[in-house]
Image: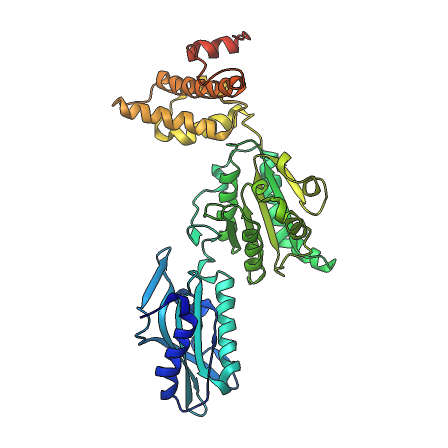
Length: 436
């Protein structure tokens, strides 16, 4: 019976007992990279890949192993990690010689990957060359370079359909951000290298929640992919949360890429843990940052720039540029965004509420539109009336004010919400300059 507490010994003993006696050469058993047991990675090993001295890789097949049940793990609809045994074949076209390597893949008692291989001792360097190529392919995220490659998340990749046309920002700000990205990859990375500097640029998008920083990152990612860049997204959604190693891992992947790379990190402030702060500062300095000669740009966001260490915020070089993403200040932009979210339901009379959308984040406008459309559908209304749209606006304003009043009074009161008056009357009074 397979004992997880003796997994190393059992796999080794199985190879000695069942496999090595069938071979006519001196054999070596050792550990191998889990990249060699990843079917998606193996898919990218080119046919007749040269491993040295005229030898080439000529394919693999599943091998029998009565110790482990064969299991293929899928991620993002792609065949990934393989549990079981694989036989790798190598050939020398000039001499018609061949040799094989048997790989056994499973987990140890801590549920960590365990991969062991058995190969002819005299071909050790040839196998190591092949293993290095597997690791290189996996570390570059090659299988995901047409999508956004995710580090530390539930999924390995994600797609984005958001474009810069969907982003509503002051024109000068929008142009500045786009120019910063384009100029770095088109000319800046070369200039950095000419000055003996690492081609690593860092920009921060700061603003209150809901101003569209995430959408802007998605749009920049979409645009970068269309330009042939590699995009990596650092996710804080896994059980590990916002941990420094995810950012460092993303920069390692970027350094192995044969393309210029953008690394996206949302809520940078949540990664500033006391125990890893020094490491983060060194990475942002570039002193401990794996580098991609084609250029790497780190684009980070934050809702709370005040929570980021002053040694980051106030020292040039750790963050090269900080862009403040504002709340909606233009009636034209507010109307454009409202039109976008209302779609075919738009009517010109809706312009009446546009002034009341100013100085609010884009997420507020989106919620006003979506809730109004939902209410209209619930009421089986054939059209979205101005009254329904105003009720949606009043409801959201009332909810925000109730939360603010609750938070400001919670220290002096027991649990309870402040009762709100009529929303439309409140908006009218505010417009007239009366406060209640």
